[in-house]
Each structure stands twice: as structure tokens, then as C-alpha cells.
Amino acid sequence: MARSTATPTAQAQKEMTVNEAFALIDALLHAVVEGMASDPPAAPVDGECWLVDSQPTGEWANQAGQIACRQADSWLFVSPTTGMVVFDKSAAQSIRYDGDWTSAAAVTVPTGGSMVDAEARSAIGEIVGALQAAGILAGS
Image 1 (tube, rainbow, N blue to C red):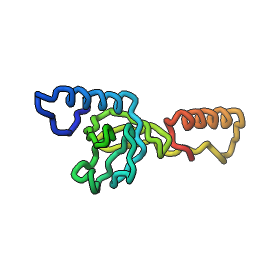
Image 2: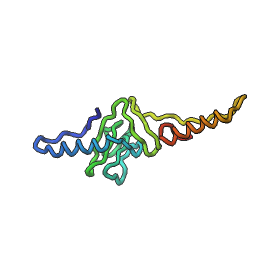
Image 3: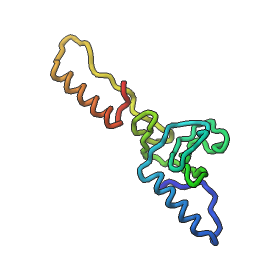
Image 4: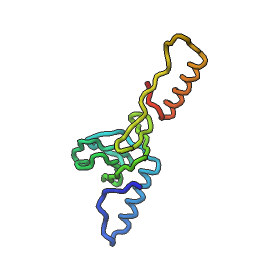
């Protein structure tokens, strides 16, 4: 399970811990990130999340590899776990964490060859197109 790296609040302020937990549930239940960046956006919007690149600056300093989620005008940082999948809006596809964020490589439909089967080629093209539309494969 992903854990926040935010500093826990005092026991006297339990509502802060509960609010942070709800914010993390909101951010991670249907995880969508804007993309990967080293610098926080100039005008972040509550609810948006980013993957923090390897050389972070500003408010993201020392948070390399984390997921930065904007909530209540501050950043919450979450450590990704192996197998975690998020949808990357900038790439328009799902990406998976396995020590690093990876995505499916672009696939091209078959061309050439000594024997051309138009029906098979068309079917393969439709499968590739459906996988790209679903965000499973990157567009070519």
C-alpha cells in the first residue's frame, strides 16, 4: 500500500490525519497524473497529481520518484509501489511502476513481406488501434 511521506500531525488534530487520508484516497483510487516533471507547476490546481522526475526542484526538492498530489493548497507525496498503475494524461496511456515508471512501446502495423494477407493485416491493424485507443499501447 502506498504511504504518504507527509509528516504526521499531532494527536490533538485528528481531523488533519483523517483529511489527509481522504485526500490520498481521492488521489490514488483512480490514479491520474498530469505527466512527469522536475518542477512543480506555476499555478497548481487542487486534485492534480504529477510524477516527480529524478532532479526535482522547489517544493518538490528531495521527492524524486514520488507522486505529488495537490490538496488544500499543499503537496502530498506518495511513494509508488511495484505494480501500481496510473493513467498519464500527457502520454494518453496507462503506465506501470516496477522500480521505475514504464509504458508500452509504440507498435506499428505490419507492412511488406513476400505474402500479403489483407484480411489478417486489417485485423491486426484494428487490434493495435483498439489497444492504442484504450491507452494500453502508445500511438505510433
